[in-house]
Length: 137
Image (cartoon, rainbow, N blue to C red; front, side, top):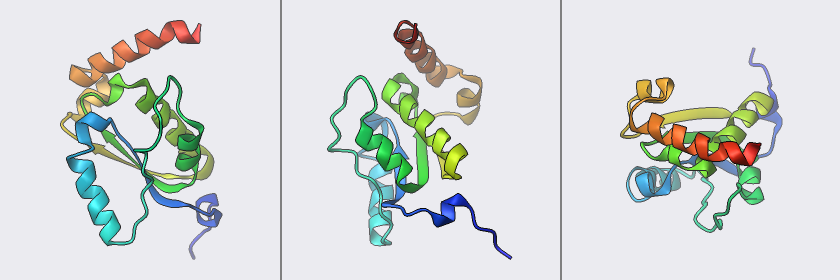
C-alpha cells in the first residue's frame, strides 16, 4: 500500500525548479531540458525575469517551495555564485521539510570534485564562502 507524504498533499505551481549557473548552462543543457519538458507538458519555473540582487529574491524562494522537483545542475562556476548556493540551501531545506525531490546533474564537473570541494568547483566554492564570511559576522 502506498503511503502519503507531505509531498503528495501539497499543491504545486511548477513540476520543476532548476538551480544552475546561467552562463554555464542556460543556452546549452538547460535549453534542451526545458524544450523536452515543454513538449511533455512538464511545467518548469522560468527565472529569466528575476532581477538579481545581493540576496535571493523572495519570488525565487516561493518558486522553490512551489515546485515538486528541484533539479540542481552543478557546473564549474555554480559555486562561484552566492545566489546559486543560497538557492541550494533553500532547496535542501524544502527537501528536509516537505520531502521535495532533488535531482543532481553534474555538468562539466567531476562529482568527486564537488564532493571533496576540489578542482575548479572547489576553488569557486572556497572563494564564494570566504567572500561571505564578513557578511555573516
